[in-house]
Image (tube, rainbow, N blue to C red; front, side, top):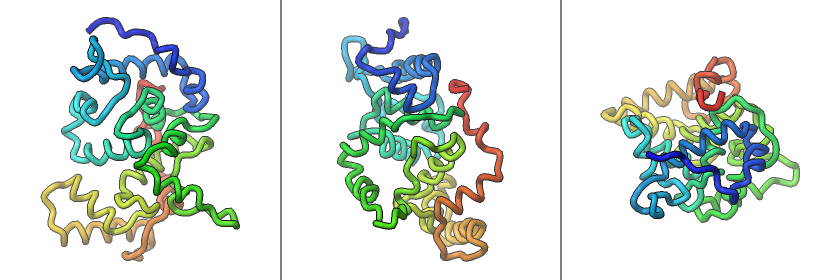
Length: 234
């Protein structure tokens, strides 16, 4: 493969830096990775489309060996992409979730969410803030510019498990996740395990739903922030 070209002038690197907290060196490294993935017969003369889609992630080594890869891809494109595509700024927004940097400004992918048909229901929920200023459960799990690196990772994990996207983790959400991860597991077995998982978060209230606040409070005691980081972003 030839040398990777420079980031196109049409991409505002300063804006990406402000939105993600990443350095220009880190963004340049991500551009190299993005360019390598965006390479197939559907693109220009050199095989580049200018965006990533689901098929492009199949070229990530061993990615398809992960049993929850389909769920991960869905969350990536639902949360960060638009119309089944992931532009470079959106790709960086996703990758920066696993960085250790504080960020400022407003997320680029939030702007894209408001223009995506796939997010019409989510956008409506975000706009329906009550007169008291109380956030809805769905709004609570949105990424915010002032999220700490650890909070961003917690929200990403929460959204991975929140299968029905209602802003809560239910027994049914955990069951579906278990089936993806384990494969051959009966409904009864998945139900028993899911009840125990929910019980761990809700003080044995098996039929309760887990909010982001409860999920985050439980995970704050765990040392996973560095483990979920990427060397590329350190």
